[in-house]
Length: 159
Image (cartoon, rainbow, N blue to C red; front, side, top):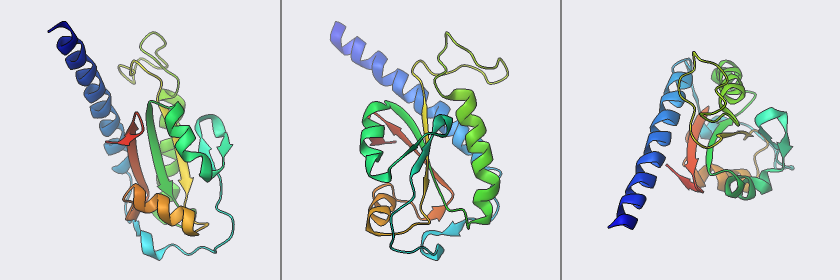
């Protein structure tokens, strides 16, 4: 009985965080006008570009799984520099990353933002313009069909 209540509290907290992240995503997606379909982005078969994470740190795209394992709560933006809609979206995503990343309820970054999640939120951008088999697998795994796209990942699972 007590363990069930504990489990229920944990599930409710995860859902509250997911709802908050969906609200952030909806706000950011509201500025997007004409998304590009996944099949219309040109790229060569060379080495894929790195993933940009909160704070401008770049990690190899092959390290995405490790990044997600280390980040219980993550937002991932898939974009292409050639995408016109991405040009307006990515700065907003970066702004949200600066506001929410590593912020907890005990460390409010900005009172206008509202309540921060209990755990830090990790943000990552995946530049899909490099193409290649690895990028295609990641795009398929996260069911990305248009750019820009954002995915919420909680404990390694897409929400």
